[in-house]
Image: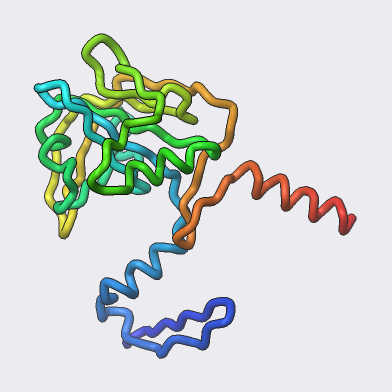
Length: 194
């Protein structure tokens, strides 16, 4: 038996039902995934020549507790792909709600993404660390897997830092969301109706 789904949203008519076994188009998949909120991160590394590389990602997630592994997705067309795949280690910098400009810089092409932002080496020879990141994970590169139009970069977590009291910056419905402000607004709204 074939199952079907429909999608309705605010101000949108119902989408036609379709067989669940039929894969989504690229546009449909982007729309579907926009509903999945993700923490905005900047993934950074340094190549053998000392050049810093980094990109904005929402695809960081834990993979294993023992050993402690996480993964990030790197697009096959990313200018950072070669540096990331060839690096011995990288940092996943979780952005705070005040760091929208950092996310925007690291999503742009043709600029020095690090300029104007406070990055320091994690250690003497470590990958770049955003000094006031909400949180940061230092990773030793454990491998990569090509999947579709991305490579999954797997890192063994060798360090953790939490330097900010601000909430994380999220990406949801193709927009920035500050989690603390959202909760504050909800609490204020509930207080008015109480």
